Image 1 (spheres, rainbow, N blue to C red):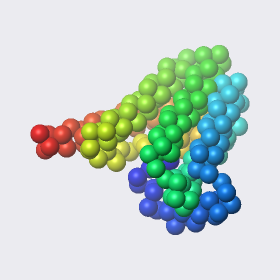
Image 2 (image 1 turned 90 degrees about the vertical axis):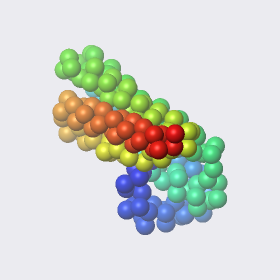
Image 3 (image 1 turned 180 degrees about the horizontal axis):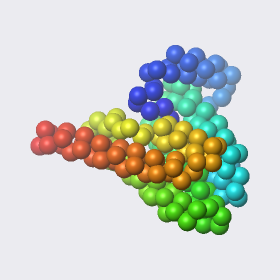
Length: 194
C-alpha cells in the first residue's frame, strides 16, 4: 500500500516488521484480508453515523496492507498472484469506506457529501485503472500527488476530525490532479515509444 514516495522512507521500519511477521507464520494474504475486513468494518461504522470510529478503524486497516508486501518479500512468496490479489482488495477497501460515507450522507449528512464521496470513489478507481493499464502496456506510472496511502490518510483524518466535507473536497481535487498527472505521464511515454 505504501506510495512510491513513502516506500523508500519507511522501508527501514516496514521490512524488519515484515520479516518478523513472516517468521511468525503470518502470510501476506492474511494481512491483505485483515485490511479488507477492517475497511469493511470502517465502512459500516461510517455508514451508521459513527464517523470518528469509522475513521480510526479505516486508518488502522491501512497497517496490515502496508505490511503485506514486506511479508511476501520476506517469506519468498512475492509474485504476480499476490500482487493481483492485493490490488483487487485495495480497490474493494477504498470502496467500502467511501460507500459508507455515501450511506451516512444520504441519511444524515450534508447534501453535498454523498455526491462528493461518489466522485472521490470514481476518481480513485480511475487513478488505479490508469496505472494498471499503463503497466500492462509496459509504461511506468509511479506519479501522482494522491496515491492510495495519501487518500486513505486524508479520508481517515477527515472522518476522525469531523471535517468530512472539506476532506472530500481536498480528495476530489487531489485525486483529479493525480488522474491528470498519470494520463499526461503515460501519454508522453507513449509518444516517445511510437
